[in-house]
View 1 (cartoon, helix red, strand yellow):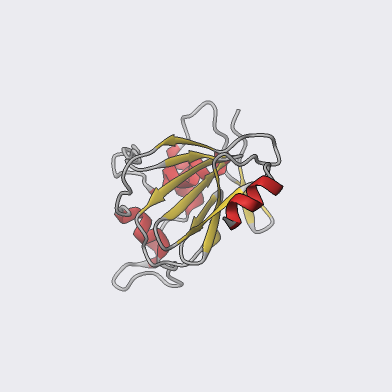
View 2 (view 1 turned 90 degrees about the vertical axis):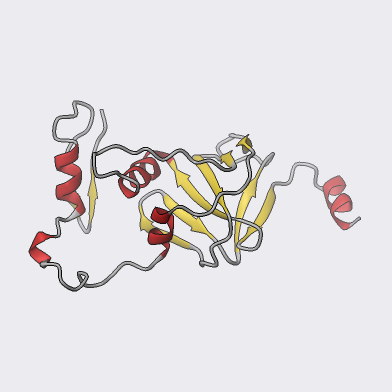
Length: 171
């Protein structure tokens, strides 16, 4: 009754769903999110073979990928364009309207998949030192890896430092 009253009073309101109890969400925002996700799930042969089998929602800037709850907390800013919404988090949901005018909509509604290993690894806080037994000189920075992966690509420029961050231009 309360929700019906609110919806009648404010019919153009957006909808928020709490995460962490029934589902968790990986929020992939724009080109930065696609690149970060691709680098996260990159296979040894240089391909990304992952296809999300679960529910997908288009957002104002990208996609929400839904998974079974992990018990993990929220994070933002660990990877450019990727945010995670777990316990005590919220997402905006269909049919809400983003300030840019894009309407949130469900692209695919499938059963919630278990989080894949790469997502579980992403949810663990990054190590501040190299794992034991590995020579630190053998660990290549992501900039070197990115630049070597895309060295022959016509549409991707190398990463360049700007302050404490790195940027690239895709043509």
